[in-house]
Length: 190
Image 1 (tube, rainbow, N blue to C red):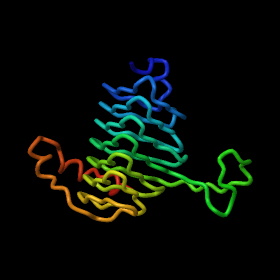
Image 2: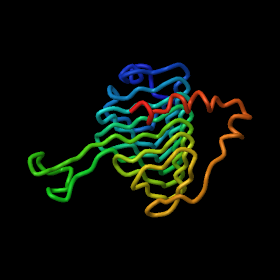
Image 3: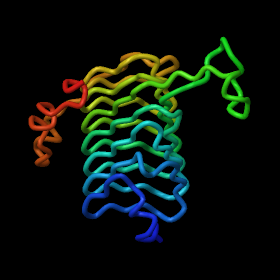
């Protein structure tokens, strides 16, 4: 079952063929843009924060959380597997760290996190505030990204480090427009 048309109208933008399942928790949808073919499964948590742009054919699986009040940019063909987290902001240790505390007690820093085209965040992996995945990069299951993962590299562990490389040739053989997506890298534009 999908979100009703009235709720879908509250998003900043919705492309063709977008699916947002009924039990997805969506906060601040007015800051969220969903491009053609994007799919958001039940039981995930999306916070619009400052901005959340979801590219074409992105799949956000159940139990994914994107939160923190900052900005998250997700490129075409990227995916987040069950339990993955993208944190775009956090309370700082020089202040009260409870989100329930009065605002004057708190010090929250918000950042931009980027999942470039064709990148993948595996099951239960976490991207800390301000980290990015390059085109085709993979953050392995359970890994914690504390710094940027370069294009076409596979990183795993806590903290995450390079454990391998991903070959773009099989994607090209399937007709994925890898060269076009590399030329339109979200990170190159920033």
